Amino acid sequence: MQDELGAILEHFAVIAQIDTSGITAMTHAVPMDMTLRPDEPQPSLPVEEALAATPKRDGNLIVVPAIIPGAE
Amino acid sequence: MTEYWSIVDTARRIASGEITAQQVTEAALARIEKLDGKLGAFLAIDSDGARAAAVAIDHKRAAGQPLGRLAGVPLSLKDNLVTKGVATTAGSKILDGWVPPYEGDAAAKLRAADAVILGKTNLDEFGMGSSTERSAFKPTRNPWNLDRVPGGSSGGSAAAVAAGLCAGSLGTDTGGSIRQPAAFCGVVGLKPTYGRVSRWGVIAFASSLDQVGPLTRTVGDAALLLQIIAGHDPRDATSLDTPVRNYGAAVGERVNGLRVGLPDEYVAHPIDAAARTALDNTIKALRDQGAQIVDVALPHTHLALAAYYIVAPAEASSNLARYDGIRYGTRADAQDLLSLYCRTRGAGFGPEVKRRIMLGTYALRSGYYDAFYKKAQQIRTLIKRDFDDAFQRCDVLLTPTTPTPAFAFGAKATPLDMYLGDVFTLACNLAGLPGISVPCGLSPDGLPLGAQLLGKPLDEATLIRVASAIESSVGLGDKRPQGIA
Image (cartoon, rainbow over all chains, first blue to last red; front, side, top):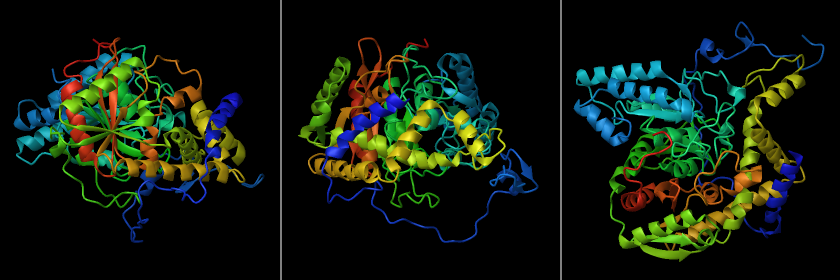
C-alpha cells in the first residue's frame, strides 16, 4: 500500500505547480448562506429505537470501555 | 412481461387497473430470485415490505383513493441510502447488521409517492470505487457481459435496472458514481445540481460532492424520479430552497437552435475507438436535429482528477471518523479504548477505504494543508470559473461519460489506474453542476457506451431535453442485455 500511496501522491503533485495566489478556495459548490433551522424541540426517536443498535448497555446508557486505564 | 416496462408505463397500467401492484411486485421478486444469483445486484431484498406496500396500494385503488405518481412501481435503493427497518450497510463490513431507526429523505419521498421498494443494491464500500469490485460483500456483474464490471459505485443499481430486476433505482454520485455505471450498463443516470436533492439519510462519503439521483431505463423515467426526490429539506443545511421545475415537460422537446458545447480538452483526451465512434454519432444526431455544435475550452480540466482525489478523501477521512465502534460500527472486542478503535476500524474497513482515509488525513495534516487541501479547493474555483465561461457560449456540454466501455474484473491493476477512468465525470461534482449519462450506442463487442451532458446549475431540464434527443436517435431502443439472456 505504501508504494500505491506514493504513486498517487506523486501524480497529484501536479497541482503544486499551479499559481493559485489570489484565488478564493471553494468550500461549497453552490453559493449559499448556511441556513439554520429554528432551535425548537422536535419529536425524536423513542429511547428503545435509538438504542436498538447498541452492542452493550446499562439501562438507557451505552457501555463502552474505560478511557482511563484502570478506571471502571 | 413486465420486466422492461418503464416507470411511467408501469404506473399508468396499475392506475388504470390493467395489472395490480401485487402482480408487478411478484413478477419483479421472481425475476430477482431467478437472475440475481448471477448478477449480485442486491445486498438485501425486502420482500415482506414490498408485498405489504403492493397490497396497500391495491387496496387504495380499490377504495377509490388517489394514488401517488409511482403507485406500485418496483424500485430499489443503493445501500448507502438509509431505510427504516431495512438493513443498510454502505457496502461495508463496519455497518454489517445495522438496521436504521429512521428513514432517509430519498426513501421517504419514494414511499410517499406509493413506490414499492424491493431492496437495497450493491456498491463499492462507502461509494469509493468505480467497479463495485470494492464492495465488502460481493462483486456485481454487468448484465451485458458477466465477465465485465457494471461500473460503480452505484453498480448494483445500474445492473438491476439494466437487467429488468426493478423499474428504476436511486444512487449517489460523488465523482461519477451514478453516471459511470449507467454508461457501463446502458441505462440513464442523472446527477442533480448539488443541493437539489436532500442528503438527509445519505451515508456521507464527501459531503460537498455527494448527491442523490435516479438510474432508469428511459430519460422520461429519470425526469419523473427527479421530480419526486427534488426539493428543499430543512434537515440538510446545503439543500437549495428554490422552486422545482417541471422536468417531464422537457422530455421530447426539440433541440433545434440549442447550443451544445464540445470541450476541447475532453475531445482531445485519448479514448477507445468505440467511444469515439459513439460520440461522433451523437454529435451528428444532435446536429441533424438542429442543435448548434460549438467548441469551448475548459482549460483547468487536467487538474480535476488531482483536486478531486484530495478533496474527496479529505472529507471522507473526516466523515468516516464516526465509525469507531462506539458511535457507529460493529464493535470489535477490546480491553481498552485505543485497541477498540484500532481493531474496529482495522477489521471493519476494506483496503480502498483505508487508502482514502490515509490520503485524506495526509492532505489535511498540519503543515501540508495549504499545499494539498487548500490548493485543491482553489483549483475547484478555477474549474468552476471554466464552466461559467463555457456556459456563456453554450447551453449544455457534451462529452463521453467514460473513456472506454465496461472493463473486465481485475483489469485495473492499481488504484491510480482506477481513478484515471473517472476523468470525464469528476469536474461536474467539483463545480456542483448537474450531469446526465444517456446510452448512445454499443461497442462492436456489444457493450453499451454513454454520452454525458453537463448543464448550468439547476438546469436539469435542458439536460433532460438533450438526453431525450440522444435517446430517440442513437439510444439503445429495444436492445436488451445479452449476458442474462
